[in-house]
Image (cartoon, rainbow, N blue to C red; front, side, top):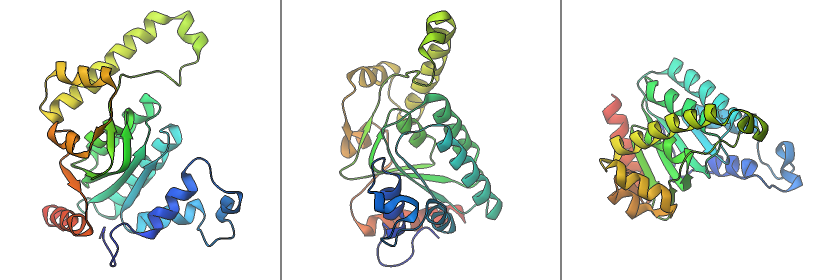
Length: 231
């Protein structure tokens, strides 16, 4: 089950976040001397609770991690829900699209929970989740697709090639937002151009999330509904 014990937001997840939050104290390297688990141990504990996490910038390693996690969890149960914690500024579009596809085809339903921010490609990944939840003081950012993983020289040599690909991906991303939110293409494009943060209530009103969670009780109720739906 997702939930175990009196605290909904379990300490294992907090420890995992500290170890992956970009800048971390030297004492935390390789598990450190403060009682924190190694990366492998922390991920193993998350997996044992059918939980995955996307924290920090999205890249090829993120895609590998989600791929392996989804394969393992689906092999254990193709019906029991999987909780995906999300706190990310976005990242590379190709790995993000791969993660989006993997979540969409996962036999076990994936439920996303934004714990601080889902920006750019992270907000796209959230749209792949069966239920899209967000904490009450978290936010979502939409903006256009960028090619950060493409070397500048390659772009300069064949700009038309990458421009066409960029347009194809951008059209797909906009259509995902349109489909899941029920908003018009014009509204989605306007939001992307403005690049303003959409806080939880705004995201809910725009149809970009399904639930806003502010208490442990709301979190537990949501998980109980998910488990009941899966069974």
